[in-house]
Every structure is written in C-alpha cells, then in structure tokens.
Image (cartoon, rainbow, N blue to C red; front, side):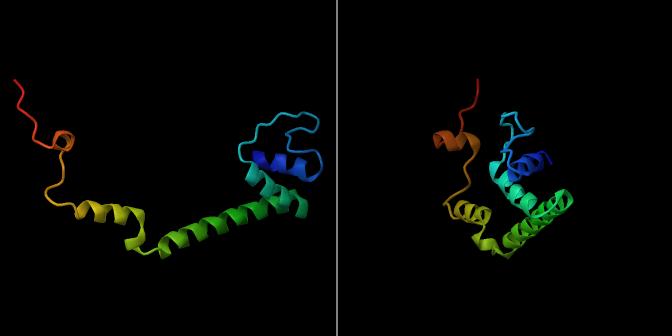
Length: 107
C-alpha cells in the first residue's frame, strides 16, 4: 500500500511525503491518504493496515447492499429501457435514425 507510507509519514509529522525531507508529491488519492493517516495515528503499522482492509470490506459490502436494495424500477438502466419502450413505432435503425427514411439502394 503506497498510500500507507505517505499516511504514516503524515501522521508522524513529516508531511505527505514518501521519504522525510524529500518533498515530491506522487500520491493520487489524497482523501484515502488522509483516512489512512487517521488509522496510522491510532494504531501501529499492522493494526492500521488491518483497519484499512476492514474499512474496505465494510464499504464494499455496504455499496453492494445499497445497490441490491434499490428496486429495479428505480435503477437508471430500467428507466432508460422504459423510455425506449414507450416510443411510438418501430425502433430506429442506424440509417433511419439519421435521415428519418430508409437508406437508398447503392448503385
């Protein structure tokens, strides 16, 4: 976990750096680095890693539970399908969609 090293240095007073004294910013997830910094300030290294892993599992499961609890009729893909199904006439073809008439035969 690259971000954990940044978080460890940040929570121990060196700033968000890979090596103390070298001020090169190369992290891509500042919010997660700050969350990890909170964990590294509360626990030792192995405890902080475990806490972040448990947090990841909890967030993943809550996201899946939220998705599963959303009724199918309220999901974006169901709304898109309902809009398409309610259009009058046959579904547009690729050529008919552009011009509104069937394509002319090629010579």
